[in-house]
Image 1 (tube, one colour):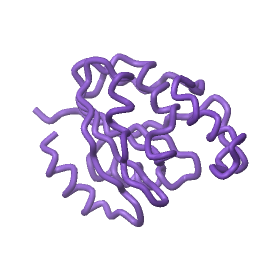
Image 2: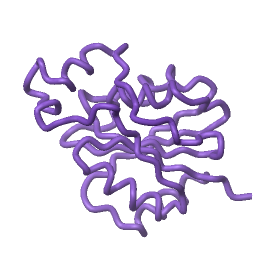
Image 3: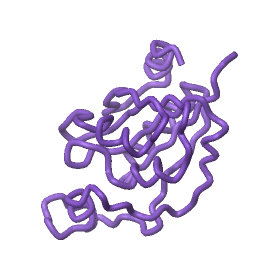
Length: 160
């Protein structure tokens, strides 16, 4: 039996969204956007400003930005590809909010990310406490233009 897959992603600027759409096609998965209740502005994302919203959130690892909705229906899926931009060498805290808003028990979560200059860092370790009962696997950095074919080959190599 084929497992049912979901590609859930948070994208502040559209970069991760583009990769997530292609990945969903390649994996024959459903697509779900993790949306913040209050969208991020360009000023919010200025990592050089210590008072910007993203800087404040990432400096307090317990901060949980509110979600716009709770319509992911993760109970319908076996495997969740979870994508996000790398912020401060890890996942943005809204990804923790998402994981803590659903029951991921028995699910396999495979991470993917986009980044301007760093790898997945401590993302898996940082997210694991937020997804009790799930197996979180480091996936890969999906920078640049990703083809449907290359992503399908990656998904097939994962045996999910």
